[in-house]
Image 1 (cartoon, rainbow, N blue to C red):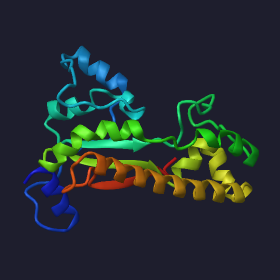
Image 2: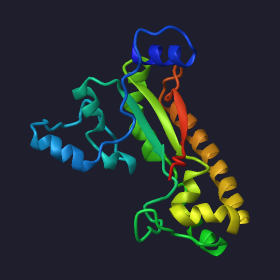
Image 3: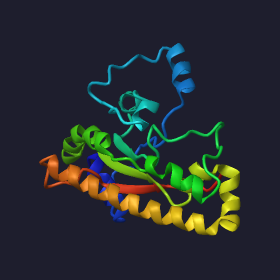
Image 4: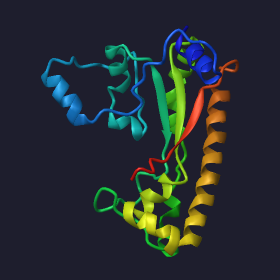
Length: 210
C-alpha cells in the first residue's frame, strides 16, 4: 500500500499493511543542532521542499528528515491566523488584546491570504496523486485562535469576563476557516490536478492542555 491508500483504508476502518509512521510535530531547532553535532547530514531540500510560508520557516529540513528517518511523507500546510504585521506578545503565551477595542485594532492583521501556502503545496499535490505523500491542512481552532490573542491565562478567564468578545472571535475564526477552504479549493483547480484533491484531510489546532 502507498501512503494515500494506507491512510484512506485506515480512516475507513479497512485492513492495512501497517500503521502510518508519522512525526506530526516539527522538531525544535535545538534538537536538530544536537543531531548535527552527532553527524546528522545537511540537506539541500530540493527533493523535499518545505516551501516558503511562515510555518515552513520553523523547520526547513522537515521533509528531508522524514525521508532520512524512513518516515511516511505527510506534507502539512498551516493557514496562519496572524500576519507578520500583527503585534507580537512580549513573552511566550502573552496577550496582544484585552478587549473589543484591541480586537478592532488588530483585526486587519488576522487571517491573511494563503497564496504562499497554495504555492508551497503545488509540487506535493502531484506526489499525493502518485501515492508518495499525504497532504493535510491545519487551521487554528476555536480554542487555539483566541488563546493566541488573549494569552494563555487571560484566555481562560475571557470565557467568563469577555463572553461577547469570545463569541466575536469564534464567529470571525469560522468565517476565516471557510475562506481558507475556498482558497485551498481554488489552488486545487489551478493546479490542473482534477482527479485528486490537493489535501487528504484538514484539522483544527486546539491543544487545550494549556
